[in-house]
Image (cartoon, rainbow, N blue to C red; front, side, top):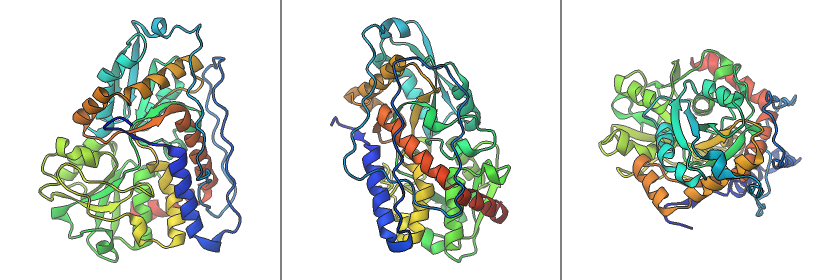
Length: 419
């Protein structure tokens, strides 16, 4: 393994975490959740873009733990290798790729996109030009990429896998059908508070307290409650936290930091940005302006220190019963098992997709590329290969679909309780 790189074998990590959590629940559910079959890898025949088929919704009323990939080593589907007849150099040479970001400039996702715009191209045969475009809100960007020609020249970068997003009323995509190219980071997630506005240290100090913790998200209706605000609402509901949501139009990191500075909110939930803060807001951590409140990371992972200081609050599972851990994982896994990731429209030609996947691995195993992206963004790198990532997305999104009745019940509850 090269320096600066952590390789994320998602099926193994996700499988072990799910097995451990479900096993901890004892005899609550004696019937094991069936393991979903992996969807077949793309064939060599180009497939035209199609309207995404909505993920079927389960009719069961009771939630169950996510489908369990086996904890034993699972062979990864091979990255498609372009056929000898496909001339990748000629296909990409002189062309422009558009990399779309669903957030305003200045956040963690935008920073990664900006670096990829200048650093990834040299690993793609023909060295195409990569232009970064901010198209907000994130749902609009995802719909735009989903409807684009599957030629590899219009792709998107997400801050999350997008599983929560595809259940919003305006969504026109299914993440399981996207042409997944690769992931660059994931698993860490945090909740932090503005120190001068709140008296709390970690989550347990706010249980049953009275000083209201305020978060912001775009929530025009109960069905629009997304991943971050859903997870903080779940914690507030389970642990009697004084909690409030304000609905805003823009929710990216740059907007959130501005709202903190203006006093519109006093807390913030994000992922890779904790490591980036010393670059975007020097002194916030070192001077205690923004302080840790809860570690929301994927089970088995912790939110590490950044260059200004440690993340001092424990994993939220520390406070949970076995039953709470099972439900937490059901809704936390789709948000935190993978963070920054790049994909294209459904039905991408296997040769084009294979070329982009191969170039992704080459970039994220290159010492100079890794050193430069770490210097530019401040974000730790975890390589997620494309073919495996595609299978994990299908597995986790299927599990999330199976738990839709409970998810919708909680969306309505949180909207009425906290908005």
